[in-house]
Image 1 (cartoon, rainbow, N blue to C red):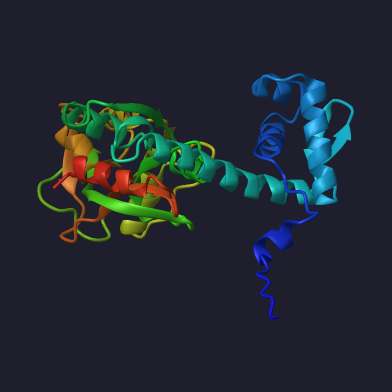
Image 2 (image 1 turned 180 degrees about the horizontal axis):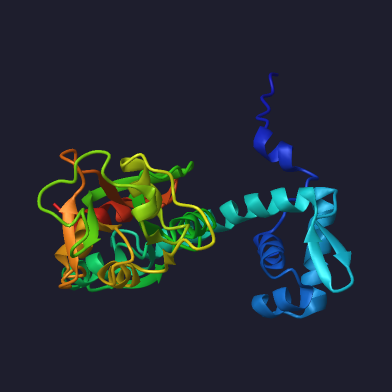
Length: 312
């Protein structure tokens, strides 16, 4: 008599092997963020002994220490740092799963966490949000304004579902959908040699004339790359924290700067002391996109959002 045995290789692979729980990974993530067992326990809403026990159990499962415990401080080991990176991805995907299940068949409904860069937020959102609210009344949009590097980190850590950013910007592991192009323009004080009419001839913009946004704003780097100029250096170089401040500095005669077309169209440069001109006949542009983590279950919703925010 012939007997047939079906072997479950997947089940066999996990027999006798314990795997980390989501709770343990969450504890480790909080520990990395707060660098303190007491503060991490408070953030997790558990007692410190409970969190410590969870981390110790994780270390047993991994077969290696994830933190170095010293008086007054907690530091990740190399294994711990790698575990945190992977834990963030696992936790983000798990949260994606929950949100996708809750909103199955109901795109752009429920909570949606959207990041947006400061050189876009005040000019795009007032125009786009009323229509978005009308088309998707069940959408609960939570908006975070921040610089591109921190928004990308938020996407990868699962803290954001999507973000409105400007390209070019190198961001591995991030997908995007186009909103539209935004021309980069020059702004000069009235009476300045560059405060004429028509496009600024190539080579006329000089680094010594420029006042810019502070380092970290992608518009700064995109504009400088477009005109092939290195950022001015030195302790006395002015760096603005916002486009509104930048316009005031240009109006005061401190120098020449760059403004996005959407800001000019919104009236930001409506100042008698400021003249706005195109930069050469090539008209350098940045591409505004909605970005999301590659593999996110909310990718389809992010694409819908990009359509709703279209500039064209």
